[in-house]
Image (cartoon, one colour):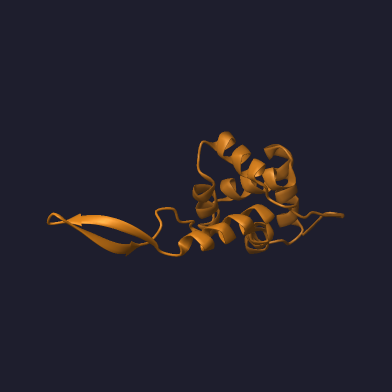
Length: 130
């Protein structure tokens, strides 16, 4: 994404970036991404700042310049979403989740007898942020 005379790309979003976002904001990463997708400029700026490893003031200056230069919120959100989709951390997390998605067997006690039932794994990943 071009801002002023420079091109900015959000590099690979790592687990460390996610932790930093959560520590900084006190919110889960999913909450921040959902806010961004609902149009929150604050959430968008926070995610962008951590993605490009700038403090929030520098990131908001860059975003302001991006809008002045004719950029849109949709373009900025697309840049962030592309970084999420291409993140090796999230790709690995989703791939590992797919492996676990296969149903597991669980014993459930019914009327004194044991009944075997297929149940979905308890952990799932919300893919809404992708």
